Length: 206
Ligand SMILES: CC(C)(COP(=O)(O)OP(=O)(O)OC[C@H]1O[C@@H](n2cnc3c(N)ncnc32)[C@H](O)[C@@H]1OP(=O)(O)O)[C@@H](O)C(=O)NCCC(=O)NCCS
Image: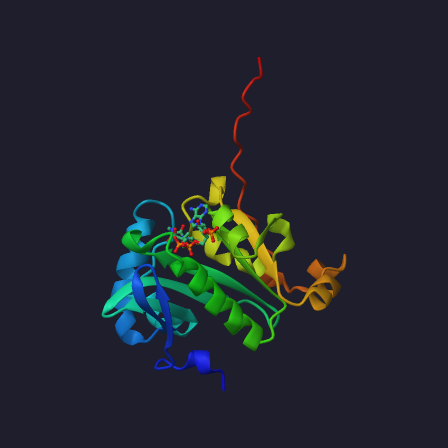
């Protein structure tokens, strides 16, 4: 049994914002998670989510709370027996830069390790945050094509400015899976077009 997947399995932590609880999400967390994610989606920082999508995906989510307030959330979404994505990672404005994001990533990494995954990746605008928590920036082509399916409904599909970041958990197994024929083992439904990277015009140097 993975203790982290029990909704009542609280882990206590004390940070500058006071006592924080970190646990797997339950259904009652859906409204505040939606408020948080969709507030960032309105600014074009994240993809919006619906109540229906959240109900389907609630088991992916971990939350940080303080009393009855939700301070942050993040999800671990499995793509294959070896790889998962950290997504929907969000910390409330007033709780930023106080370690909540790091706690969430750490819990999601522990969950990934408990499921014996080889690597975890994310698409992000905040690559420096992800580098601080152990990820490295990678070429988008290094990630499994399945990972891009969400991109098909992204308004920025034609000019993607998100950065791919990866944290390898089992280097030996991950490197083995990166053989030149790796991509050929995927079925036809994986053959989707990658988002088109945003072309930033070069500034003439004078
Ligand atoms: C990105 C986000 C989750 C970070 O959460 P957070 O709780 O503020 O981060 P933490 O306090 O745990 O920071 C961990 C480290 O990353 C650094 N960091 C945090 N945000 C950063 C940023 N935007 N740029 C650079 N470094 C950042 C912190 O300074 C800290 O460094 P330190 O350990 O050297 O002190 C939060 O800012 C957020 O919700 N942003 C909006 C939504 C978003 O972009 N989500 C990511 C989707 S993939």
